[in-house]
Length: 276
Length: 233
Image: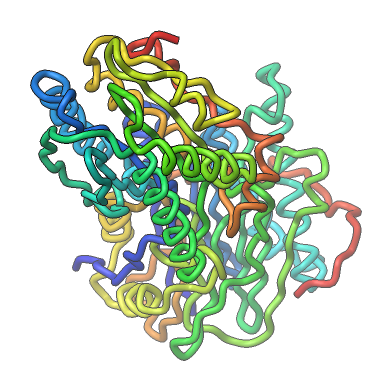
């Protein structure tokens, strides 16, 4: 089964400017399905912290609902489309309720759905998603940067679904990690997006340990000096463990109380793109 | 239990090479060279305050008096250390420009070899007089203007004091007129330079070669701070 730890911390430049943490992250295990989510609120939008928190919350909630519904289709790519569509609807509805433009709540979103035999990853924007097995780590479908390193795609964009990247992997993995671009220099090769192996080796063995905690992840993120971005940083990692005792099932600092009954989103009719 | 994984500490950031060509001829003796030294010393601290600029900026100092020499080879801002300059001799400005262009070409090649992206380099010429190596200067000025026209370098000429030959400085750039330093406000100049490098470091105007950078100018101009605090514009 999957054991998950994670945290989001405010970046140095956001501390200096008083912006606060615009990253959000969380996870949930429900009906045998574990879901991880991270979102990076757009730095230039003052309300993006709310946008990223809502997106993470809604994505996790939607996957939990799908996992508990016997009538849900088995296609995990469709689960991801539903989760993203629902997250976007939530953000857009919130923006509308505050009489603001959705773009003011712009954020990226990355979601991983882990079942007994599949790993499904959906991404919008420049999050980092790494899957590892046997000390081999792969960045799953990284965003191809356009002309400018500081540009990415956001959930609130009207053409968001054209940029949604879906990957469904069959089989097992030792670790699945989601992060935001604040860590890109430290844990990936910024040119090739290849994961920095020693980091993920360390992450895997740490999270597998019985003493590991999300606070430990948080301290690591907050203590990183010279991260070269000054940006907020998030890390959520799921590792395979065989012992079920003392395993955290829900978490994330942006994870508030919620009611599944509120969910009314239906699976959207989106252009079908082949996962992978 | 603490989580202390190994992280990638190499510096893959795109680089802004900034060559400072500083006049250390005998006329700079006394207050001007003292102020220049103090200004550069403060700059070495300022540049380290900006997390991005201290890794993206690489500074070289080339001095020119009776000859030109590299006093500080291109060094990342985070490692930059001040070096005390002394004034003597004449003003081999042309030799300094040739040296700087050679150093910049070598630096760009080093970036390419390392797979690093770079910004268009900056070249500053600060002088309180005029070139005393006339023929060398004329050829060097032509070479510099050609490099500028090919979008290979941005040129900034700065005259110091009443005897700075702004006409000669103007020969160094077809795109930017030289400015006059207000008195000996080297500190203000270097403060502006640090702020300007910070602004540039945040822009996306970098690429793997000159042509890749040239294509970006039309869509993203770097907004530099006003030089009002130190220059007569």
